[in-house]
Image (cartoon, rainbow, N blue to C red; front, side, top):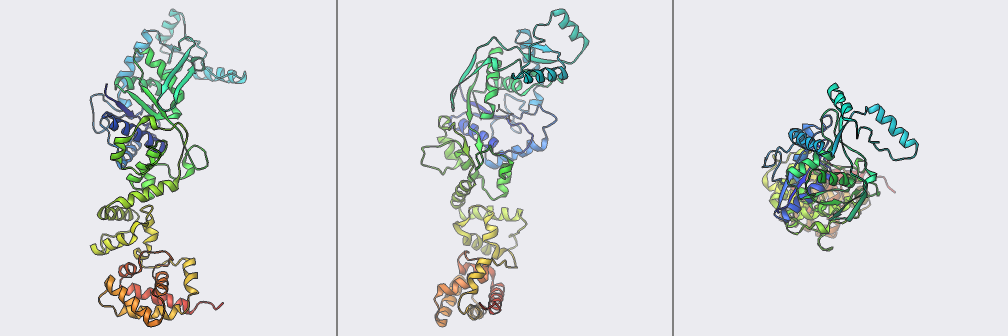
Length: 487
Ligand code: GLU
């Protein structure tokens, strides 16, 4: 039997980290087993589901590169792939369950149920439906049905017993069915509940493995009972651990960006995000940490998903991202940086090709995120210079900085060639003439030209600025140095 897995998001928001990891594990498991990755949109909750959210989720998956084999926009033999279009399936299944005695109609009104719940809670019990409509005399049943009074359809929980499964991630998991109750399958507005629709669809879509977050573990016993009642064999279940923030609490918006898109805005590249998400609860051999998606597709094994909570570590994300940025070839890195900066309102398209290439090369391998280019490359992106305090403190106490920067300004003003080679020769010759080490002169120039103590190579910096701006900044720094307060 070939592997069929699904990612089944409810379209009520963005694709967040937990959902993206679930999608990734399903995708990788399908690819590693030459199986099929299905995307199903669980939009039965009409009040909370939006088209916008569907769009955001699809965009998030596409951004990560997780292509689905069946689902929205692709179709497939098991569609429709939106639950809101699958009512005939749910109607058919509920009719079967009613006919076989695995389900019954319940007319208990919401306020009665609320009162009974409150009573149960007061007596210290777990609130559970008390089965009042389970065995209505058939005359009464017919009378209520004929009256048109609203009802829900409930599952008829079987006699006490254990519901258990062998979870690929967590081993054997068992629940006593007494902890469950006659849960609702179809609401009074005719809409199916999550557990019911999910099982009907997983059966009809021939899903072989259900891989999802462990927040669904408590749903699994109900779903197993439904498989049994519908006469279907259950899939294999694998519940991935929860994702915690650095403070040990479940990852949430409080921890900052959690939607995949927001990470893109922070300058994380999809390759880095995918790699990082894969490592959130999965390991290959405990050694290798850097993977391209194509490699993950080969080596991913569900058995190596860790049952312990995974901690979301932003530093690790940035480290992984940095490695992937380094692996991009020069042209691709430039394309990504330019697109990123353009979204931030910095348009490089008007600059000559050579300038753009030099800029990206000068930033080199120091970027952890694309956004770092904004700070690390700021000196070349904006006319005005932002001088960092510690950089100025450094420059202001260097001997003779004012006159020396002025000399360098004159030297650069006279450099008609303006090439990396001429800039280097000119600077080194001047240092020798002034009797200072070239490194000392360069350290001064770096602060004067970039406003920072750490910057790209100084000759790249000069070249990128161009003569006028470089000279102007050297003179401005010299002037400020002259006017610095005496200690
Ligand atoms: N719609 C559910 C969710 O977004 C799917 C759960 C499942 O995979 O069964 O959490």
